[in-house]
Image (cartoon, rainbow, N blue to C red; front, side, top):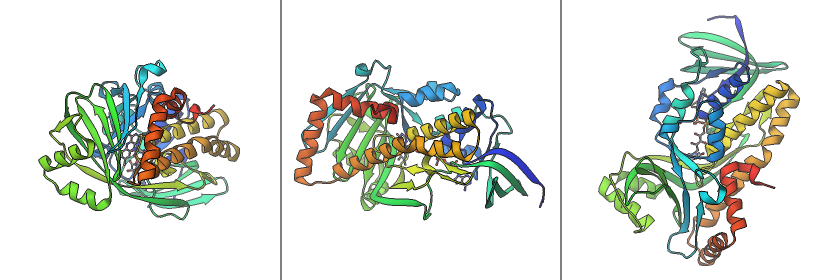
Length: 380
Ligand SMILES: Cc1cc2nc3c(=O)[nH]c(=O)nc-3n(C[C@H](O)[C@H](O)[C@H](O)COP(=O)(O)OP(=O)(O)OC[C@H]3O[C@@H](n4cnc5c(N)ncnc54)[C@H](O)[C@@H]3O)c2cc1C
């Protein structure tokens, strides 16, 4: 046990991809911060998710040498449709003069690319926070690390711990859906095309990854139980039934599942604490917005801290600057899930007309595409 208080300028709790991005963006501007995570660093290598990252995300990650070039599969087109209904739209990278609309990367490859740039003393791994005491000029964090009790006093405490648990400051809206993720081999090849197929059970996404598709198969919890229990052949048949026959699937990889809810923190800043990434907002994975949004949180916070320093005004400026992008991301994903995850006849008709309109009316399609590529910068 030690009574000595160590002083840290900026302490980032959570060394996931968002926390590491903030640390590296600050370091690139010459500002030191300390990362802290409760898990060993290798734990990120066990995460089964694949992430669709926008072209805008690639541009930001390249600036901190955090872009996993060889592990990224480009998405050149995105096909959007609904099961047993008319209407479909195709978004094509050629319309935006970009090499790709986005890229698919395994969470673990992204984490490894970011971690490769951390200095040896940048991270306290396997650290357990025991207490957080806010003060008038900073926050004191008591923690246990490598068998030692330590007290860290920081000017700014950044929460990047990922999806929050029960907390009165976080509003929760449960989707009654679970995402089953795994990788499958398609025949013919994917031709760099992603698919978003809406079904009454929830959206089914196919993301090109190497020679395979990374699948996000969204289902009500009891159907997810059943799908998780199937053997590989029966799982492929269930996936095939949900997707249709435009492609054949084979060789299902290991399956994992994630319960889905919209979690939004009401206030991003409290005293000298600030929340970013999934700790600030956890979205439904439809249209792959979550990390893209968290990355923009980290980037914007780093820019403001590097320009204005740490004080109440700069933190408030940060919260204000993120309002439109956060609300837009939540509104976009929540609206899509609610409008598409049902079998209501009139809604199916309206959805079909909507998809038709997107296809026939390029400005509307371009707006949706730009929102996915740039976030709030898509707004005029
Ligand atoms: C099925 C699925 C598919 C998805 N697909 C996409 C996609 O295609 N595109 C996209 O942009 N997003 C996608 N997302 C969202 C994306 O995964 C998240 O937005 C992203 O991982 C958030 O990163 P983060 O660093 O904020 O949190 P996390 O990745 O959760 O990292 C949080 C870190 O904090 C640590 N931690 C937690 N609690 C503590 C504590 N008390 N003390 C210390 N450390 C702590 C954890 O160990 C972890 O290392 C998807 C999500 C799901 C569930």
